[in-house]
Structure formats: C-alpha cells, structure tokens
Image (cartoon, rainbow, N blue to C red; front, side, top):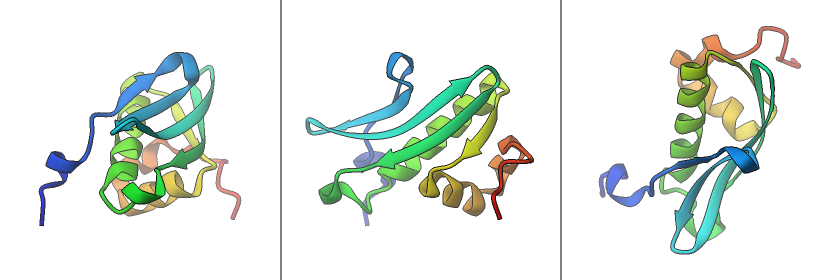
Length: 103
C-alpha cells in the first residue's frame, strides 16, 4: 500500500474563490465554503471520480479544518463529507458551531 503523502497532492487555499483545492493531473478536487465573519459554512466537497479513494477528500477536509482552527472561526458542516470527517476526527468537533446540527 502506498503512503498517503506520496499520492495525495498539495492542498491550496484559494481564498478568492472560497475553496480549498488540489490539482490532480489537471483536474480539480475542492472543498468550498462561504465565510461570514467568524464562521465558515462548508457546502460542497468534490473529488473527480477516477481519483476517489486516494485520501484527497480527507486532505481537503483536514486543510480546511486546520485553517478554521488557526483562524479561530466556527464551522457549519453543511457538506456531508465534511460533517462525516469531523465525526471521524473528534479533534475538530470543537470547531462546529453549537447550533448547526440539524438532527
């Protein structure tokens, strides 16, 4: 099995487009958000189908949540992928806005 760091491209924060991006051989994987002051609402994560299962979505989520943590902003995980990532990685749960869970 390959080391995830070997196969996962670098994630860049494209603040002007409100998203975290990874360029995979000319194709774009992304985690997009809307920022309103001290809150980031993650609304979509997308990885090209042929690149799924390589940890790219996880790398996007991790970069996005690390950014939110550094910036001390709360997170609203509208995107199911980001919500599931936070569920599996409790070290990021403190970032979730307390009234943002719909269930």
